[in-house]
Structures are given as C-alpha cells and as structure tokens.
Image (spheres, rainbow, N blue to C red):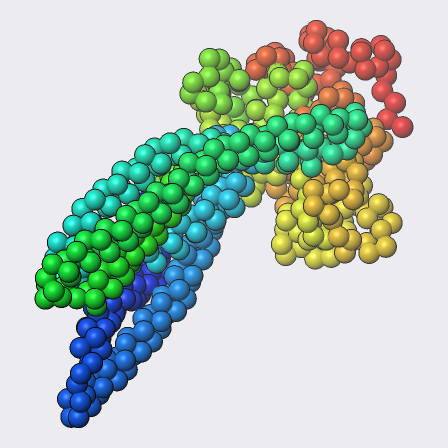
Length: 589
C-alpha cells in the first residue's frame, strides 16, 4: 500500500482537503438531528401558549429553521467540494501509477520482462489501476466520513437517549462480524478473477496478432471456444463473489429493522412510564435518525470493504511491478564512449535464470576485429540469438566477460552501449506512424536524403516509392499493411541510420529473396565499412562471403573460419551447405 500510494505526490493536498471536508460534513450532519429534536420538542410545547410567550417561541422556531438551512447549505458545499477534490486526487493517483509502471517497465532488462507476460502488464496498467482508482476515491470520501458519522451519532445518541443507545452495542458487532466473514470468503475469488483476466487478455492478444494464421488453419471455432472458457471462468468467479457480497443487503436490512423496532418499542415504553419527563418525542425522532446514520455509515463502510477487498489483489499486482528492480544497472562511473566495433568473448557462459538446470551458452571464446563481417550458422536452439543478445547487454553473462571496443560491456553506460549496437530481429517490430517516423527511430535528426539513402541500401526505397504517399505512408499497428519482407527491410534501414559500431542481423533477411539479400550485404560494405557486421542466418548463401563464419551447436562454438576452411574441417557446416546446394554452387541470381 505504501509503495502504490507513494505515487500520489502532487495529489496529496487534494486528498487531505477531501478528508478535512468530510470531517466537517460529518460533524454538521450529526448536529442537525439534535437541533431538529429540540425544535420538535419546542413545537410540541407550543400548544396553550399565547401573547408574548407564543411570539418568542415562534421567533425561536424561525431562528432554528434558519440555522438548519445554513448548516444544510454548509454540509452541501463541503460534500460538493469534497467530491471535486476526491475525483482530482483519485484520477491523479491513477495517472501517476500508469506513468510509474510504464517508466519502470522501460527500465526492465529482458530477464525482468520474462517474469511478466505482456497481457499481464496490460491488465495491471488498465483493470488493476482502475480498481485502485475507484477504491481510493471511495476511501478518502468515506474512510473518514463513515467512522466519524458513526462515532458522532453514537455520542449524540447517548447524550439524547441514554439507555436507548444500547442498541448500538448489538448491531455494530453483528455488522462487523458479518463483513469479516464475507471478506474472508470473497477475497480468494477475486484473486482467481485477476489471474483469469491475465489469461483472457493473453488469449485476445495472441489471437489478434495471429489472426492470419488462425484463419489460414480455419481455427476460429477453437479460438472462440478457448476465449469463452476463460470468459465463463471469470463469470463464475464473479458470480460467486457477488452472491456472497449481496448478503450485505439482508444483513443491513436486519439491523435497520432492529433499530426501528427497538427504538420505537423501548422509547414509547419510556415515554409512557415517565409521562414524557425522561424522554420526549423529539428525542425519539433524533434517535431514529442517529440509528439510521450509524447504519448508513456502516453500510458505506461495507461498500468500502468490498472495494478494498477487490482492489487489494490489484494493489499487490501493481506493487509487484513497481518493486521489481532491473537486473541490469549502470556502474558507478560508466564509460561513455565506445572506441570501435571490436567484440571479444572470453570464457562466456550464460543461462536465462539462476534456477536453470543447464547453461544456454557454454565456454564461448571469440575475437572479432572492428569492421569484420561475421556469419553465425547453427540449428534451432543452438544459442545463436542468445549469443548476440549479450553484446548490447540485453542479458548479463553468467560467467566470463564480453568486451566491445576493448571495454567490458558491464562498464559502459547502458544507453551509450545500446546506441552503438544496432539489432535487427527476425520478428521485426514497426510502430503505428508514417514510414519516415519509423525510420527516424534510428536517428531522430536524420534528413530526408539520409532516410532515402538508408532505404536504398536496405532495398526498401523501391517499394516505399510505389506507395501513393511514399515515405509519409501510414503504417498500421503491428505493420499490418506491409509484408514480412518489407518490414525486415524497413528495420534494416532503421538500423543503418544509427551508423552503429556493431550491426547485428538476427536472421533478419529470411523473408527476402537471395538476390535482395545479396544486394543488402553489398550495401553494407560500401555504406558502413568500419562497422562490425554480425549476421545470423539459416542460408549459407547469406554468410558465404563473410570474413569469419561461426558454427554453433547446443550452446557451443564448434568451429569458426572462412567458407572454404569450414568446408574442409566442419562436418556440420558441410552438411548444411550440401543440403542447401545439393552439392552444387550458390545461385545468387
């Protein structure tokens, strides 16, 4: 709670103002029944008076009426201002929480991100924060007002009714016990609901992203059934929880009716027995009002209790993200300049988590000179992507060290290091916006000519120019209006605009033909000759002309050398080469 509500910051004062206004409103509301009771008693004794006495009583009645109107107006103003301040504070808390979570996620390493699914993060940023906002809004309006109303009502009732106030001794424990039992039952149900929300959002996200595959395999009915299963699970849990929470109503009605019967029966008996000396009609009326105020306060408290019960799980889930510390941090005195694109792996081993049974990479030793073109070949799961993700420090090594420009990557400022290393992935991500805006991710200050030059080198200029709006063509969410090969070339152009010291292509030309692939590699030689190029590929043709080719298998480097050298000494490389060429030579055309 402390961590989550620490996001209030500039909205603390509206929260405090709301609390103060609610105290004033509660105090006034509990004074009105006493004044009204005195007024009723005065009017009751008005009969039989005449002359000056009658006029004095009437003047007193008018003054009391004016006083009641003024108090009601002040109470109304306090309630209205309290509502405004409350809305401002709760909406502000939600805004700050979303910003804090979003900013925290941006600092996460891949290791941190692996702990949270994207659907779960979305649920926390939307549903969970909305629950906290609604709960906080009700808390600051009623967490002070309801207890204060109850305390003031009980005190005033005791002053007015004496023994009649004993009914509070009965109804308050009954309600508190009932609420505690309800909360104990519904809290586990709400925990299940939020877990199901994550699964539901994951199903929606996966289905939307893979819509073409779903339709291609005619799996719409299967996806609908999977969605309905999760949605029905949420319905069942919510239905159960709401049924239990609905017991608040009968419990409240029972206490209210007990209040009414107890006060009327005992009060009437006291009036008859004392002849109106011990207690009067006005006190009876006020006691009914105080009883109602106490019960309404408890009812509002029960609503808060339900909201807090729902939001408690949301608070926990939000706090999980806020307290997550990035596993990758800058050193105390970071190096802020990368000298060149040389990359050295010395005794590197790596596993994705400390609990992993085996290393994903084992004893890697590689020395890549600045400006070299290096190809990496290996089967699925051989560790190719894991290897290159260590260079920009997306993960940290488990053992050994990696140097870029002669300096251990853990000694660099993270932003400086990653700005010097550009990665183009096989599953490329483009963002909503124009093509030019997407390309300027590589260099926000790139001129139009620089964008065109990078696009020509990435073999993207031709298809971009074919669009009616050219570089101002709008890219739909996820790049839905461009093909896989076009997305790959856009991402390569975006990386070229960075003019990095190290360029990593993680099977990022798999969706283009061999001729285009060859032209892209030729462009690298001319445009970024001093940049180290590391190319992961499934096709031997994509790395045949590299200065060095690395062969990986089961997380280890089995061989490295030129194309001709590997044909002589590497059985794995020779087998891949012969399978792809049928023993012949490559046809780049």
